[in-house]
Image 1 (spheres, rainbow, N blue to C red):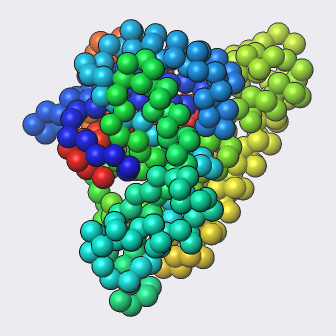
Image 2: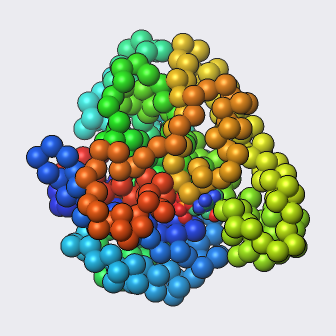
Length: 351
Ligand SMILES: Nc1ncnc2c1ncn2[C@@H]1O[C@H](COP(=O)(O)OP(=O)(O)OP(=O)(O)O)[C@@H](O)[C@H]1O
Ligand SMILES: [Mg+2]
């Protein structure tokens, strides 16, 4: 969304837990992984999607660039969370050009922000199935200060941002690159990070519903920290399954499961909301991405409570990945690259 590009870019996913970099090379048939890397961000460098400590942020991106060595300075970024609105709206029939000219007043009523404070983009989806003579339009708006902050932050390390996308769309692009289109199947894509859980429900290459839940792995780590009286760093290790002296594994599981219950209920609410708005559409399966998809007990809890097929996705399913990447341990963070992979395929003036 937002900006068009005719150049190759690499994807830079700025998460609150880590920054991920993916560069792909398009071959005749498939994409090939060209560059990959990840760098952890110290806690509180990014809070609620905003860069709080730009010095640490810049140092981290610099060291990621020095290690991964992407072949270009042109980059695709993405934003998510409360500063981003994605909404399907209905408008009278008009051409794309006409809509572009009237976007200001067509969209103002749908935004909880002042129109001057946001960048807007849109995609005409086609004739509305609900209201005759109207068009369905997917409207995207992101707060200018957030987008500008992200762009300025990467410019400060010598990069040139050409695309600013939205996490849920990068997630969809990544999925569609990797999985064959199964006609009329309704897939709920869920990317679970440290701060956010991005959801995009798709069908036949179109997004039916998106939502960012303000929940991520940090919530689990904080619950462990508080209840066990340990540091955040130790709580991270315990969460990821590392045994620690004096820590009862049953208690750990109990705390983790409580947090899982919370997010599963929230996902369930999202599904109910979707079902009410789309009574003829039934979700066929859930596919999980992001670091928190690996949380112990999560997949089973989702299967049990939602009664749906739940799978862990593979962002490199249809991408050729040389042995050298596996030797350097890309399998340890593959799930976390979902958004960066989706950003890396943005090019050629696509939307
Ligand atoms: N094996 C594991 N078990 C449980 N949680 C894990 C595991 N590995 C990583 N995580 C968690 O995954 C999260 C990081 O995932 P990811 O890289 O997708 O987040 P992010 O993109 O940095 O965050 P966000 O986009 O939400 O700001 C952290 O909370 C981390 O603790
Ligand atoms: Mg993320």
